Image (cartoon, rainbow, N blue to C red):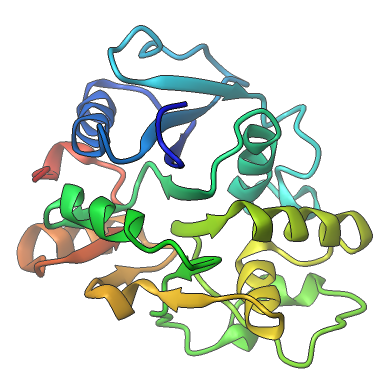
Length: 241
């Protein structure tokens, strides 16, 4: 542990293009944030564990309790993998990124900007093309909601403090009916936490669940500067800066 904050890239995929992405994140974060790949080894062992500057934390989604929210394989819960990682890796803040979200811009500048924000509990994506929490179907699972208002935020990328992560985990032991894309923003905005959106620091988003071909076409044909795109499964189309 060399830095007070870290980046975790969550993936169950492998391949040359992902290796290129991993190498890029490792390069631009070096000296700023520690970098880890959180790898789901339920189907294979990671091939990139010997790469320089890359720490690999393995978990098994088939054995990690609650990874598939409500036992629905359409709802993998990367927060559960992060909680597992944080038990043995204590940082002030964690920047979680899914492997299929990419930035059309200089990732190193983004990492530096996020890392410079000390007094923060949670930074999230503000953009929601669906128009509100009630339009996201996993809301149907929520039971015994103790909060005044329910919020939703895409979690393809988010920045979270260790203290807020501990509170999240404690809440989940009492009520596990919130998918994490509801739980994180709902607890943050209803509690005494310091919250920002990535849009507040100069970044935009064109993200959703898919379809993949739509978002990959948007990225290839009309990508805007300082904008994140998801889902981008074909990383060979990405120019890393």
